[in-house]
Image (cartoon, rainbow, N blue to C red; front, side, top):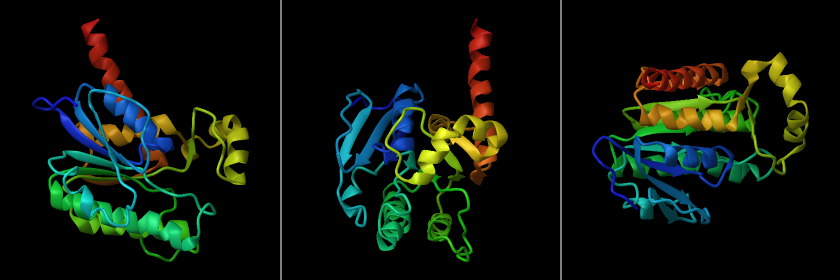
Length: 242
């Protein structure tokens, strides 16, 4: 793995084998402003890149062994999660809350100046009053991250995430939404976001200085707006060199 040159970001991605994390990984590896990417997962990614360092870790309930891998990092993207109904409620809370708290604990101790980009979800309820366990758990995780004191913390709350590449959908709701996506996107544009667009925003928030506040929560509408702004900003320098 190449050593980052001055000014390049050393980035950690948790959940790079998942839907959004996979796009975040590929996008980050292509960015000249990213000097290295440390991808932490339970299984190998099956790709090779001079910027990429893979770290295998099985128990995210205890991230103490990751202290070395998380040292001297500039930013982290957390995309690890579980679908409601796919696991027990106990496991859902462990993944949605426990893993976040444990990973952020070790990251803060190892790289106290690192920025953090967190994949939350629409409807996340920091008050803990929601009847939906997913909403309560995401809200609990958000509260823990805010209390952790990251100098730059970005919490993203996407609604329906559309995976551009077909897959086996995890439940009936996702199967239905995928079928009606073209109509749903037209009628309710601010209730959908492409997985690759979401990943681009998560990476850009921690890698580039976007002009947004050091810590901020982005609802689905905000994510779409920021994605459009970032893409325009990236196109304009290219036009200037043409």
